[in-house]
Image (cartoon, rainbow, N blue to C red; front, top):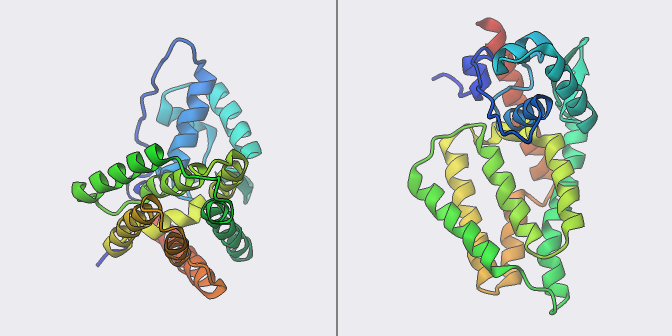
Length: 251
């Protein structure tokens, strides 16, 4: 059986993406936002070389807006220089385990705050909307895909932000941007996808029912609160990423 890979590992980056053209947005802004979106949703693998020529061809634009977009994404930390070329940022094992631990700490904080301070309440309307979204995803029979990482991040971001501290959410966004290139490999099998959807709905149900201690425990179990679990997930994701790179190189 072939190992599933992100979309770019199967299709390469030769596909053409037609940019939307809102009048108020410049071409350079369009390229930046589309490339950023594609990086975040698994269109490119961490081993795809992001040359000006390749990106310009994909978006059917000149190299000038691409050059500026790549410079901005480099400053954002979404891409990095490796072997003299630009690639999606790929954290080391040590960096990844440290960032996973930080992610766990941040994600728990929304529920911890609500437990510690009875005046803090989650935004119920936002969480009900989020639960409906996951019920729909469950019913859709969605196929495993690297792009599912965007759905997962939205869940965790919404759960945290609904507790009312946007500064914590902003920090989580920064962490997610650093580990996304590896985390996307966690959604290439059906069992991981099914487990994620089920666990997300369960956590939301608990929070909406006011069972915050149980919700906190479920969230801890979901993200893997122990160092051993974090390291195992990091090692597994990095191994999958490296296998994908080998498969790309063999084609």
